[in-house]
Amino acid sequence: MSDEEDPQLLDDRTVTSLGQIDLLLGCGDLPAEYLDALATRYRVPLLFVRGNHDPPRPQGDYPLGGDLDGRVIQMAGLRIAGLEGAHWYRGGPQQYREWQMSLKVLRLSLRLRRRPLDILLLHGPPAGVHEGTDLAHQGLRAVRRATERWRPRLLLHGHVHPHGSLSQRDTTIGPTKVINVHGHRILELELKRV
Image 1: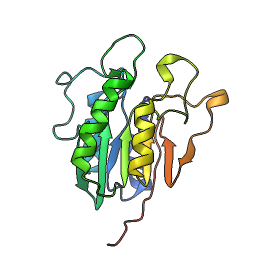
Image 2 (image 1 turned 90 degrees about the horizontal axis):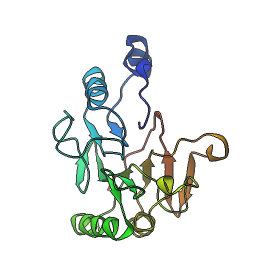
Image 3 (image 1 turned 120 degrees about the vertical axis):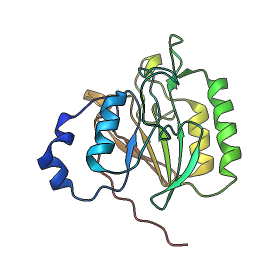
Image 4 (image 1 turned 90 degrees about the vertical axis):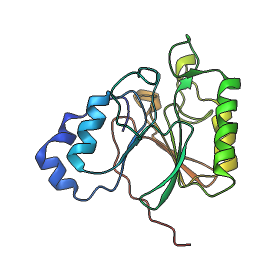
């Protein structure tokens, strides 16, 4: 989920109808209280990255241990990594210039150690995919190159609100399925047996 709260997700009928949820993933620009309420309501782990409208770390009462920025973790049988933020446009929190994101990508590459990645969790999109036309909603080339190199099964992002000409929400970069989860999406991912 990202960018817009959906109170219906906290409703008893919705919780019951969705059945078993294994993991919640937040792609930024969501209040800490909402993320915490969802994790509590569904009784599952929550991982998230911060968006350009979220307070900088350590501000906000975000669930402890769930911030995935620059981390790689194994959870629910999946290897998941995250990079917060969006393209720099006026210097606010979690806004990155290309060289800054390149450094973040390099650090994350060292943590990955060439191991396969199931999910890459982002706020902003990679360059060339689901971008907006304004600077604030441009994708980052460093993230695009990392996606092409790491080849995660899924890349999840928010930030770009899919209205009008931006209505495409699913695409691919090589073998990677790229999904704009603006609002929320329910996804199934088959675990690979090794």
